[in-house]
Picture 1 (cartoon, rainbow, N blue to C red):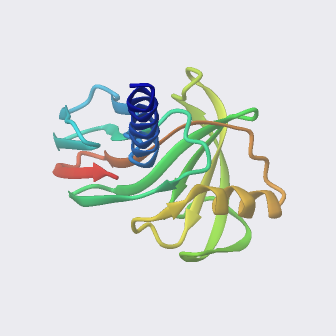
Picture 2: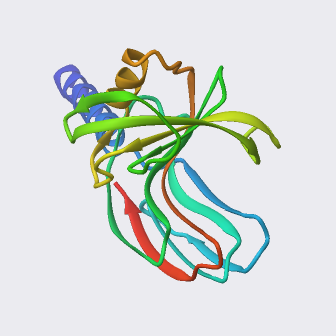
Length: 193
């Protein structure tokens, strides 16, 4: 009887550990965003399993997506499409100092190039005054021209920015984002893995 109890206890421990590591291995997104400046129409659906859908018409500016808050230094992977968007890729914020970043687009003053497993990127920075995660204020924007296809390793980019003398504070949110502006219209169906 004692052997059976010990066997059952061991089995329960193994099952608990298996479930714990399965949850870690399949960590779901924990953050969803749909921001608009109020111009035009944006219809956003926050679905299960990391999926979101959005369609928009005649927008002034909007940013929608799913990801993680805080992002940490994870790899951002996704599948799906965005038709009619001005930007589709990895977008996020850092604090201390306040930084907005886009991976896969240019704009601003070049600070140099750095290498990642996805290839070489050029970092551009510019000062922006406008809406932010800390209200309307002035912040720095990092624009990283290079690949914006799925499998963006944030740790590699953070290391690259630091190597170019640019500060990287604490991570806030990071999403696989769809953005539109200037009266654009379109639709997207994206799943963040």
